[in-house]
Amino acid sequence: MNVSVRGLGKRYGSVRAVNEVTLDVRAGEFLSLLGPSGSGKTTLMMMIAGFEMPSAGKIWVGDRDVTHVAPNRRDVGMVFQRYALFPHMTVADNIAFPLRMRKIAKDETARRVADALAMVQLEGYEKRLPGELSGGQQQRVAVARALVFEPPVLLMDEPLGALDKKLREQMQIEIKRLQQRLGVTVIYVTHDQEEALTMSDRIAVMRDGSVEQVGSPSELYDSPSTSFVADFVGKTNFLDCECRKSNGKGLEISLGKSGLILAQLPPSLKVSPAPGDRMRLAVRPEQIRMLSVEEKVSPALEGIVEAVIFVGSFRTFLVRLAGGELVHVQVHIDHEVSYPREGDRVSLAIPSQAVHVFPAARC
Ligand SMILES: Nc1ncnc2c1ncn2[C@@H]1O[C@H](COP(=O)(O)OP(=O)(O)OP(=O)(O)O)[C@@H](O)[C@H]1O
Ligand SMILES: [Mg+2]
Image 1: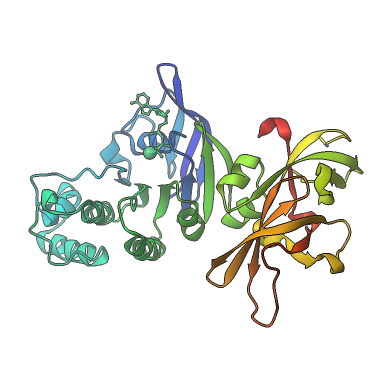
Image 2: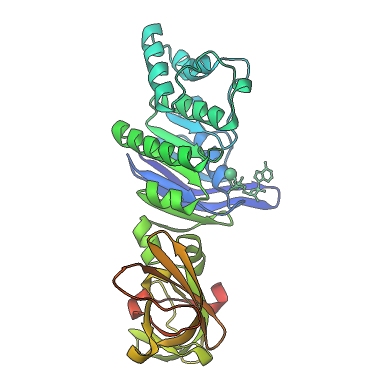
């Protein structure tokens, strides 16, 4: 079932927690809200679930305007950021609760509770009380409880926040599989960009109560529309620079003492930069080519390797440019090739399509 929010806003006194958000989530889509703490993710979810009344705007689930509909009548399941289990009920009763509310037969309820427990790997914990579980186990019970009535729309607010890395990755796969099998529409909150990139069909990046950009993981990664998105999704080098020449399609960019590079003019820039304009450029560490100074291409940036960091089959080279900037270059290691070492002079070639430029004022 699709979910639409139109001009949705929430104020707490003078605080604008959510600011005119318009977002269409397609039926069966997995959409993540990604943003820093305080950017309005939970407030937006609580309004969609019906636990907070919006100050402005409308919410649609399927073809129904649910803005004023009670939470239990919205066809929406929710896993809260702070898991809200019933403390006096056993694990099995907590999970069965939504089924009892919907008057599902006893044997069917027992079967679904057992399936849900297996899904979150908590078989054997049926009779425990929430207070007898670890935080991560409680969170898994909350996930099972939200999924057990197979709602067409599932809202999950940092459901894996309390879990260790290994269990978190297992649960990511389980949730994704389940979402695809059930065809359920999921809106998922995380501030972990890796989690958002691996799980989502699309990601909405939130900042200060607004959605800054919505797109597929690769759209956000390859074409961030603001430096905030470039910074928040994936690793990026940011460099202050100045426009030297602009011909309507491309830019020649000066990094002062560090050298010159070329950039393609991004479609998201509304005003074309003019010579002399201060800007900020972003380039991904894996998109920079590192050459020895002898095989130097033009234009390129020159620098000295300051450190080499091992990351599995990759290496990250920290290169200090002539103007003092530190650039991260990520290289997939081929054992046939010899790589520069600390202290070596290198030349960095940056393909013009890999350079994203932003107006300095928006940074
Ligand atoms: N009940 C409330 N009263 C006043 N201000 C609130 C209330 N709830 C949230 N806020 C404010 O609204 C803003 C958005 O909060 P929200 O909880 O939606 O952020 P979030 O993106 O979920 O953050 P986190 O990643 O830390 O969970 C924050 O500035 C927060 O302080
Ligand atoms: Mg939150």
